[in-house]
Image (spheres, rainbow, N blue to C red):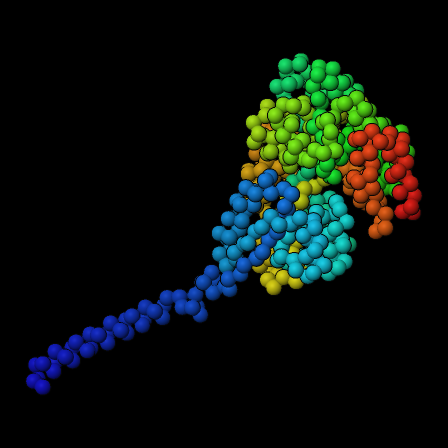
Length: 429
């Protein structure tokens, strides 16, 4: 090889070697699979989450916002969120050990969560460092069983109140009542004008009881308190008065005709279409009525002196538990932690217009403020009945399945309804 040519080849090889060394040097300083960012090295996990099937229409937009924000903050976790959490589906999954990673629970307002804990189905969250500093004692109690935390605490409250059609009221020169007597007079006035006062879903086990839920604190708050404490009786005159009022409303034709065949959707449609003037329903269904375009008004039934007492029931909207059998406990708890955060709760409020139970959640609009227009929180009869029930005697079921349908169809009067519950109460002692 000629000397000149050899020198050229040598220079070319040297140049390539320098470039290769430089490239290696750059690669050493950049992130490698072993030395990369946390997002690049964390295992990818998919969590199956069951939301409340019965409230899908009300909650779906809220969870769409929450889940998107969660996945942005946790790129290694993908959520398979399904509104599959019916009571039957969850009960079956508990018994067959086939629960999803995370699922909604109703806290201490029903016996279910305690039964799930007793069966070993729920993960104890006490050792996972949830920040619960924003929540008061009553909110924390909702999420606990025997003093241990098993779900994200509630951030919203449910209640039962009266929705009314403002256009009908204005046309007939009527207004929301200021006292309990005015409420009874209002209902009679509507019927006298040829207007059916109430939509009632007599076919729906829970929903047909909402009027009783709304009436109880207005007329029998003290009696409910005593029963809850174990010192009261269902034969208290104020309890009998509430039941008798419902019976008289039924006798006088104040309810939907043939209500025993009307489900909740049918009752709501009759109200939003203007065929009835009012409907007792939950605060969680406010978006349903607003979306129907009705000129909507809302009021809590006042006491004899005009105080508006809302039956208290914390919402299961964002109360989720972790399955004890999950293969991804750390990631599942991260989702529960996020649901417990102010950020997630404000996203949910902005989408759904739920009634906040925490002061740092800003109400979405004036309608939510109206839903919050009560003077105090009172007892929810279902919660009271749950508290005093036993495994053998479930007063809440007797109330829903026997007392309410018989009152609504005029098959029993107020005294007889009270006697049914009192007899069951005595059998719990």
